Amino acid sequence: MLAVLLAVSLVAAGLVWKRERDRGAAQERVALAHGLALHAAELRDAAPGTARDLGLAAVKIHSDGQTRAGLIDTLVGERGDELTPDASSEVALSGDGRIALTGAGDEVSVWDLTTWLDPKVVEKSDRIAALKGHKEDVGAVALSFDGRTALTGGDEGVTIVWDLTDPAKPIRTAALEDAGGVRAALSRDGRTAVIADDDGDVTVWDLTDRSRPVRLSVTRAPTSPVFRDLGLSADGGVAVTVDNDGAVTVWDLSDPSRPVKSADRALPAKSVAMAMSADGRAVLVGNAHRAGVWNLADRSRPVSTAVFDVPLADMYDMAWASDGKTALLAGPSDSAILWDLSAPSRPARLAALKGYAREIDSVALSADGGIALAAGPGGVSLWDLRGLAEVVADPVRAACRGNPSAEIDKADWARYAGGADWSDYGREGSDSLAVCFISPDFT
Image (cartoon, rainbow, N blue to C red):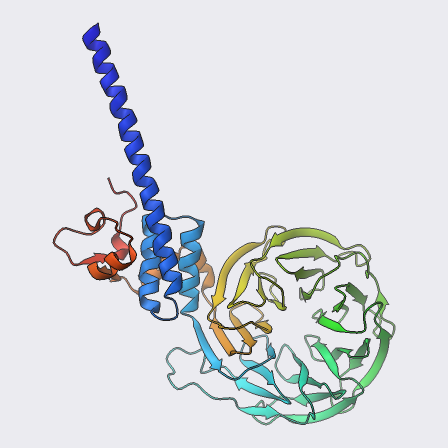
């Protein structure tokens, strides 16, 4: 009996020892993975290849929300490019992502992004035209879905209508006097324009004949005369404004000659930015640290469907892809955050578009969310996000497919692995670690 009891005690002690050893090893793997992910984030700009390999190793060693997000951000960063180093306060993008407008000072640049979106083309095209004619800084830029109609609003109180049928040869078709828009929006077909000006007026225009715009209505804002943001549904039937006091107002434009303020108190106060779904049935609003989705099926009684935290100190701009699946939120940091809103009640972070040394003032997305622009004092950057779903679903597969022979040598391991034993992960006698073949089970 004593022998049996002693044997059982030894087995139990052995199991406890093994469990504690395994727990300690697991904790060491988590710490190593998080450390590698942190170094990868620090190296994205200076050494993107090393950043990708370290981030991949982190996920292979221990896959969790932190390591996966880090690798996704690194892979998405590789899809970015600097469109121009010139400061820009406004950007707009056509529905197909091919035509872009960037505003700085008293003019707006027109870009054909065809070469930028073709990885086989090395020499990228410069801007193809400039929209000039304002005496003061441009404060509003809008572009129709097909890229053929543009609005540029100057601080001097004039909004110019442009025909971009040939984007390389823009034609100034009309000037809307006393309509200096701090914000401007166009319907999908470019026939309806809404301008929110410095006097606190919301003006609706019929641009069916771009050379002879017809003013349909002028309505005074219910609160502050200064607007921060403006959105318009694809059919031009619903507009949403955010004023300087943070009040969000929904405008029913079913009869554009008689706009109706249908929900000026039902939405949250202290909002600073907004974006509207293409169908006008939902609005995304936000302020520092937080954003929310509101259902506008009943425009007089908006219903909150989701509220989520955003890792930004403030909110400067938002964009919502026409397909309703992707939103881009930006503020005073070096990144803009992509969110999955395909299920509006369950927003999910997709990736951070990093690479800025300064704040981001304006963002834009193509209709399918495949192309993104972000602009600010540090210039304008372009991201090709086509295929992002595959990267988010399986970042390891995406990273290894692009570089199956990814390796970390002993020198980098010693520099970034925090003293972790090389022999636990690399082959004996080998001077490099094949990252794609790291096994998550190190027994």
